[in-house]
Image 1 (cartoon, rainbow, N blue to C red):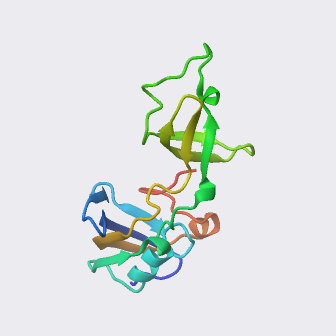
Image 2 (image 1 turned 30 degrees about the vertical axis):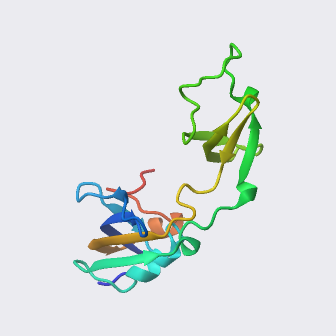
Length: 168
């Protein structure tokens, strides 16, 4: 069986910064990555690099930033008034809100966002809503652990069900 559209793929990988070699993320055999291939849930170049592989096949490739999580977009950086982050007593939590902290937020439509604090001054927080790996060339190495045909429910829902996947 080979990796193709509507297959459930289980794999282990190490993700590192292609330029620096710094490890960003690594799966384990106990907690592998499990996903439905071909539904747009992961980086398209990642999928194209593992297309046609079989169980036991190893992979080792890099994806440039513009084909991974993109390049930084200045329009996704915002100055937000400090008072927005005050608690019920009107105080600002200097221990929680620090430079480089990732803060969960929501926009005016209720969409969930995560912003990284880039600067704090007396009046504003500079928040960066670009993906944390924007501008990063990625390097993936690993191997394919398991491949199976997705169930009709998984295909209809666009994600994996059962062990390692989503449960309804």
